[in-house]
Length: 265
Image (cartoon, rainbow, N blue to C red):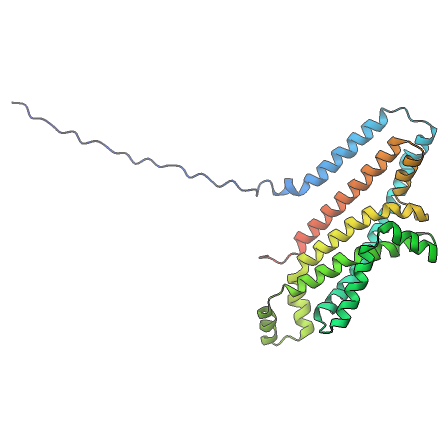
């Protein structure tokens, strides 16, 4: 007599390995350095292309290191000086407008800033040159007038975005209005303010190219001369350098924005 044995199935617990979420942490620095890498590759390609061209005497006088470095220096000085003046003037004006209860004062400041932004940049530069003088100072004033509005509006928007409860908490801690502004409100509004400064910087880089029309120098000399004389390597080189400066300045401003941004935002 045989006894039937029932074999129970053996179950084995299989552990499914957890798939680690793919995050961009390891590529964080690569993303930050990507604009720098792209600009470097573009400039190298430009140099290689120029080295293979047969340049005539006019192009050789322009496409040489001394001339290019001088024009880049003039362009950077004009851009950075104008942006610094915009920051010094527009941020306090934005704070004053945001804190003011006077509609007249608010309307006057915003109206003046709108005039500078709405007027074509070439018109501002030429008009100032006609009524005043030509040169660096005139181009500087035109750049400040044209780039004032983004920083003003962003300063106002950043301060107005701070929750009233935050101000009440600061007041409850015994802070004065000035202490609350400097210690609480401006740090919270700093990302928005710096975003406006980044916009102003890029504006200044682009508008500074027309400073050549009033003898203020800059890379606009290369662009205009290349266009007038139909020397397209000169024109192309000037345009690429202006675009590269704009990308690099925006990249550097982005690093500053990340650095000053309060933790948790």
